[in-house]
Image 1 (tube, rainbow, N blue to C red):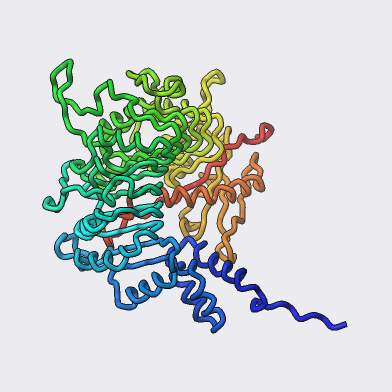
Image 2: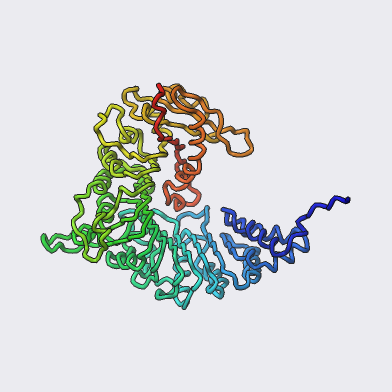
Length: 554
């Protein structure tokens, strides 16, 4: 009996092979793979080339960068043709690392943007996602000017427009160039964007009254000059038109802080501080809220506007050091405001019963909390942590060792309330952990109650730089990455009496993805820094495995 020959890839049906090609092209996290892989596939052999060119799904990613040589433009023309009627994903990155910060000297001008728009606008009915990044305003203005007359973009689901210059968000800065400050409606406003669900506007403003921002699920407003932000009423109207918003990020400024006379005192005050507006923005489905603030008083007033009964993830970050590393402000008042339910002054009658019951930002339902670069007193930190009864994951970066004391003093009486009783994982600064390890034993609040594991990957920390004995005396399990393995692996656990190495190792492995997420999420606006500038290196983080230690362990 003859043994059948093994099947080869050539025996696969064209439909199955085309599906494999599509998965290979679009499942990568690197958007440039979506450009490279179709070319590789179509140049493998004649049969694959015929199949690839006839498979329109392979050619739906369009990427243009600066400088844009003729090869990029000709490739784009080919992709637009081969994608036929399929929805398009557009990434337009025209930043220049060699830019000298002069608005007029940038090598990518409004004329270059005009050529790009003329190439892509005939296909606007197929735009599914668009991300545009520039250093200067004129290309953004040109884009907004040309698309203002587009009657409809029915497939557009995601829109991200970024002028990558965080410094316009500084308190004393005004919008530049002033001659081009006039707002323009996105796609003419109205119902042109009926499928739009995700919007990111970083340093880019529009006609907020006729923005077309409605029925969104995600909205990010980042690093704008205060003077071009929406008025309070425009801000409230936009969010009211997005009742099912799931994620909201505000980095820098929210609504414009124009002054108005207080009816009682006659003094000029910010409308954000008027009591009747407290709780006026109700987002019953919002689960993720990110606030990066530049001014503590403004941030506290802004928080007072919101009613967020379904919130699951909260991120608070002082982003003022991003603009000025020497700028540090006391954020205790923000934490005290969030922790004190008695600060609720007004409950609009239009809100649902659930809003009236939960009283604005419901901390007891939050399961993920990220605090970054907050300078606050230890009592303020502890007072807010006591409110997070369901908190499972905590990330605290650039805040020093006081967080350990805030998580719970080992000498506290048994009758004291437990801080974050549901906490499972925490990520803190590596330097904060070292400072904690060097404290006298009587001041190490977590060493007998929790397991602490330090996960070292790659060359972040050399063995000679690590005070192993101090860490081990503090009850820290050191888990070092094996640099010789072909894939990331956690190995070489250093045992500490009373701790189960295997369990700690498994916990550290499970938390690796969380650490990577936090590392990438911290300082959400750092990508906007000066082209070619060197940002401060991110601090190595450590993972706290906060499952209770073995009661029988000594």
